[in-house]
Structure formats: C-alpha cells, structure tokens
Length: 307
Image 1: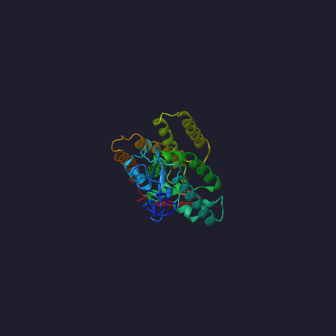
Image 2 (image 1 turned 180 degrees about the vertical axis):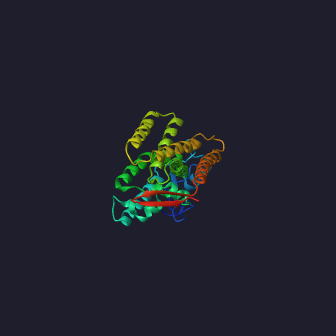
Image 3 (image 1 turned 90 degrees about the vertical axis):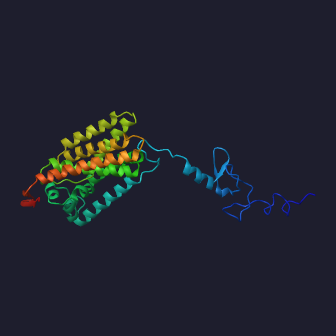
C-alpha cells in the first residue's frame, strides 16, 4: 500500500527520521561518515571524505598531533604580544607626557625619572630600573621609530617562537641591554627606550634565518646599518643596543637549537642559563661599586650611595 507523503508511515516524514543527538527537536537524514550517528547540518563539519560530526572532530583534534614551528610553537596567524607591547609603550608615553605637560619634554615627568636607567641608582638597590626603563621614550619621534620597528620585526618572530618564548626573548634582550649599560657605562648615564629589546629581536631574527637556512644577508645589513646609526648619532646607547643584540641572539639560539627530544626542558634550561648570567654579571658589578658616587646633573651635584 502506498502511503501519501508526509503522513505517518512515510519513511521521509519528520516523525520517521532520526533526530540529531545534540538537537533532539531536529529530525535529520544526514549522518557522520566517521561514527555513523545522525547529525543536523549545524553539527557536521566538512572532511576529506564526507562530513564528520563535531564530537568526532574534537576527538580527532585530541589524538592528532598539531603542526608546530621549529621552536615547538603551535602555528598561529596573528601576533598578540607585539600589539600588546606597543599599546603598553604608547600608554606609558602618554602618561609621562601628561605628567610633564609636554609631548617633547616628557622626560621631566616624575614617573620617567623614577623609571629611567642610571647605573648609580641601580647600584643603590633601585633594581626595577633595569626593567622599567625599556618602556620609556624620549619624545614622540623616539616612540614612533621604536614601535614601528617592533611591529615590523616582532610580529614574524612571535609567530615563529610562540607567545611565551617570544616574551622570554624580549625580556632577556631588554635585561641584556640594561646589563651592558650597568656594567660598562658611566655611573650617571641616563638611558631609556625599547631599543635594547628591539636589537634583541634583530639578533633573534638573524639566528632564525640561519636556522631555517634563509638568506641572512638582508638581516645582517639592517643590523649593521642600525649599529652605524647608533655610533654616529649622539645620545644613543651603543652599549644598550649591543647588549640587547647579544642576549637576544643567545636566547633565540637556545630556543631554536634545542633537541627535539624533551625540547621544552632544553629550552627552559637554556633561557634560565642566560638569565642567570645576566643576574650574576650585574651582582658582580654591584659589589664593585662601593661607597658613594657623585656627579653634576643639571647644574647641581647629585650623589648616590651604592651600598
């Protein structure tokens, strides 16, 4: 006996069709080609053969090894830390400019003077300056140049290294620049800016290009040009740039040349070793700076007791 379409007994009627397990109110004639369970169109995903339900897709993601970069980082398409660092630097600059009442003379702001890097003050137990000075900039031009460089160089390196590893390289680079200034510069030299960290990224990019067997000459040319500019233009910290360059290259090498077996442990150990070298060098220099050191700043004598 023929059953009229849409009436009870019709195999294609909604009452006779199975329902989606996730949406019991939705009859469906579709099913997962992997597990065979019924599924509505919303719960199906295109696969190489047929369609898989969302449960099978999740299970496959848990059991399938995701591709990673040479540093062991998951593949991503957009940087996150680099835009965040740019935002932080811009906000701090705006705050110092408002505090100083001037966009060009923002270095007179109380926050700027409390955060800049001066070896004598660091030796006087103001250790936060080796970190905070990397987020200060002398005027708008200084800020713009560094932030453009951070975006151009940092975004690709973040995607290669991954967020956590990139953050470690950035931190060790800025500390490396502060270390060189603290070790070798005059006690009352005042430095600030993200340049040391940026040079660390330059060094990291050169190491990455070498590791990936890419053409390293353009990167070396850019580094060489920046070093020349650092030497020829007054009031730029050559020591800070060199320190960032060296420590950035070393920390990136620790990440990219770590053995694949137990990669995370080797990388953590390499980064920890770089950090300990920085701390040991700065503590040694701190012990050598004894008593009180004085200099003349802005027409008056300025003294700092270093221990």
